[in-house]
Image (cartoon, rainbow, N blue to C red; front, side, top):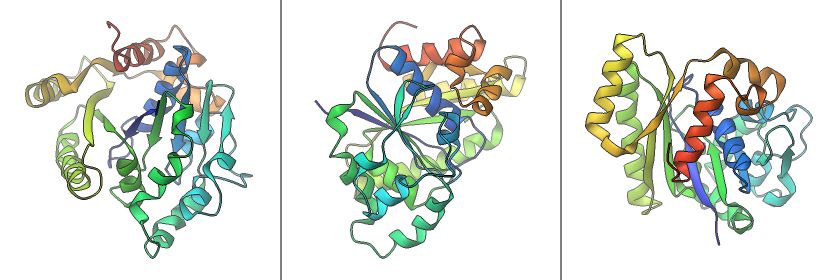
Length: 255
């Protein structure tokens, strides 16, 4: 049986996208599932946050997308997270230009994943903070999109652009693509605007908004510097508890 593939996407940076990718991967792994995380961001933050040094890598998602190596050759194990990883580093920034002239440029990741998707229960794709060809590869390969977002005014503006891109990908490249859900991140319940935006999201998107809310949490922010997912770095922190709840919600368990 093939894996469920989720793209974690938002063209706005600093919304907790990579934090969500790493911690959801680890949370699903903790639940006994076979999980693969793909770092599709040239910054390589998901790679470093999973405890893998991006600098000396010989094989990464870059070589996979260009067809220079099979995806299996780029697999690494995140011992600190309990999942497998296809890493990224700054070389990936060049892929955007190099992919333009290649055939099937939007399908590169999808085709590569077909070789191994039956070996996992979940595949998560950490997309870059841009609506570019790398993100389109992620959306084309995915069954659904998880959208992490802060509850602030500009987040709603950016959401419109992202939803429009998802529609275009659905119309031209991936007809079954759907929005899995909107995840409220870095949430501060004392902030009136946060509450107002949260209410607007629920009003417009209904049950597409996850019940789980990820709070602002120092321990989540500290974890990447140790190369450990926050969900394992401090299991009792509010952030870790929230991401465990998110994993349960994704799996359809009561939250």
